[in-house]
Amino acid sequence: MDISALQKARYAYVPKLPATLAGSVDEISVEFGSPTEAVSDKEEIREIFKNTYGKPTAIFKKGKNDKIRRELKVGVILSGGQAPGGHNVIAGLFDGLKKANPASTLFGFQGGPSGLIDNKTVTLTKERIDEYRNTGGFDIIGSGRTKIETPQQFESSLKTAKALGLDAVVVIGGDDSNTNAALLAEYFVANGSNTQVIGCPKTIDGDLKNEHIETSFGFDTACKTYSELIGNLCRDTNSAKKYWHFVKLMGRAASHIALECAFQTQPNVCLISEEIEAKHYSLDNIVDQVCASIVKRAGNSENFGVVLIPEGLVEFIPEIKKLINELNDTIADEEDKFTSLHNFTDQMQWLSGRLTDVSYALLKMFPQEIAQQFLMDRDPHGNVQVSRIETEKLLVGMVEKKLNIMKERGQYSGKFASLTHFFGYEGRCAFPSNFDSDYCYSLGYSAFVLIASGLTGYLSSVKNLTAPAGKWIAGGVPLTMMMNLEQRHGSKKPVIKKALVLLDGKPFKTFEAKRAEWAEKTSYLFPGAIQYFGPTEVCDAPTVTLKLEHE
Picture 1 (cartoon, rainbow, N blue to C red):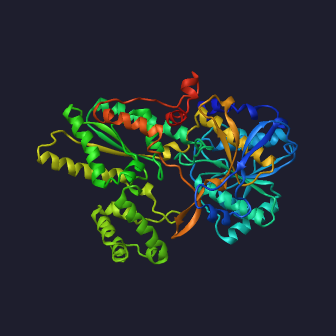
Picture 2: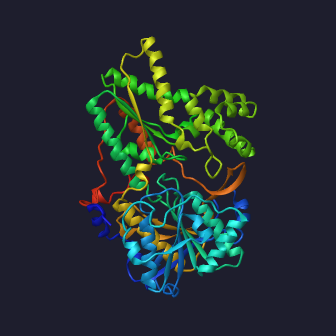
Picture 3: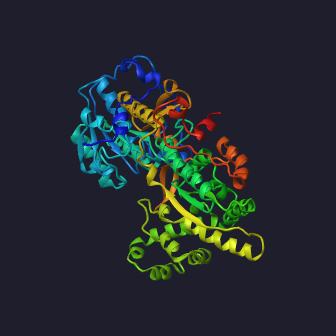
C-alpha cells in the first residue's frame, strides 16, 4: 500500500507515557479515593445503576499488582463520530495487554456498537495495529452510532461477550457512547457476567470533561486544524480586503471549539452560545453585535473580517431553543405520522396548532430552505440535527438586511460582501497532534490497567495535562459520577452531563477582555499547520483553553 511521507514518519513516533505507566507493568497498582455520587439527580441515577453506582475514583501508583499479568480477552468499540487519536487509544490498549501477557487477545468490534450486538469482530494483531499508529480516522475497525438500548440489544451484547469469553469491553466514545458503556456495565453485573466495561473520553467538541477528565481526545487536533484554516482566511481577507467570512465550527452543545479557535486566530467576532443563552440574547441582538463590528471596521476603511459561529448556536437562542424543543417533543409523539409527510407545505400544515403560536410564527419567518432544515430527520436521540442547519447563511442574510436599513438611515456607508464556510469534517480525522498521540496512547494503556485490576464502569482518565507527559496522572473515574437526567425522545434518560463554556471561567474571561479590540482592529494570528517535529513549545503544546484553565 502506498503511504505518504508524513504517514511513514508518524509510524516511527513513540508516544510518551506518564511515569507511572512507563515502567514495568508489575509496578502499577491502584489507589482508590472516596465513594462518588452523580452530579445531579442522585437518587434517580442510583436507582438505575443499583450495582455500579458510587464507586471510588482510581489513581495509578507505583506498587505491586498481582492481577496485572493474567491472560485477558478484550473487545474494543469505536463509537460515534471520529476524533483524531482513536487509533492510538487502541494501540495503547493493545501494547498494555501484550506487554503484560503476550497470550492476551484484543478483538475489534466492526462498525461500532452494532459489532458487539451482532458479534462482528476482527482479531487485532501487531501487524494490523502498526499500520494505524499515530494516524487519524477510525478506519481500523470503523465506527457507528448504534445505541444499545433495547432489551434485545443488551441480551445480544451479553451473548457476544459470553461467546468470545470476554474479560472486558472498551468503549471509545463521547458522552452518549460512554453513557451506553455505563448502562452496559450495569447490565453485565446485574446478569451475573464478569465482563468488565471501560470507557475512553472521545469528542472533538471538548464537552466531555470535569475535574478528573481535563479534556476529551481529539479536541486539541481538531482545533489546531480549524485554526489553520481560519488563519488562512484571516490572511486572505486581510490581503483582498473585500470579504467578511462567516465560519461555522463544530460544537453542538458547547462552544469550546469556537473559543479555542478564537484564541488561536483572534477573529473580529466569535459568538459564544453559552453567553447568548445566559444573557437571553435574541436573534436580533446577535445580528446587532455582528453589525457593530462591521460598521466600526468600515469606519477604518476595513470592509472585511472574520466571524466564528458555534454549530449549536441556534439551540441557545431563547426563541429558537423553545421552537426546537417543541419540534423535538411534537415529532417524537407522532414520529411515524410526521415522517410520512414528504412535502414541506404538508409538514407546516401538520405543525400548525401543534406548536405554540410564537414558535410557529418564528418557523414561518425563516427562509424556506432554513425552515426545512429544522424539519429534517432527527438524530438517533430524537433531536434536530443542528449541523445541517446553515446558521451561517441565516446570519449573513439577516446582517445584510440590517446593514441596508442602516445605510438608508445614514448609519453605515461601507461595503459588505460575504462568504460562508462550515469547518467540521475537515478536523475529525486529521493526523493527531503530538499531544493527542500521547494522550490517546496513555488513555488506552490506562484502560488496560483498569481492566487488569478488575474494575468495571470506569472512564479512563489522564490528568495534569499541561505538564510534560512524564508528569501526567493516570487513573479512572466512575462513569456514574458524571451522570444526570436529560429529556430524550420525550422522557427522562440518564446521560453523562456535558461540560459547557463557563462564563466565570478563566478562558471566557480572557476572551471577554480582548474581543472589543478584535472587533474593531485587525489583530489576526496565523497559527499555520500542525507541527510534528521541532521545538517542544511548537510540537507538544496543549490548547490555550487547557493552559488557561490550569493557571
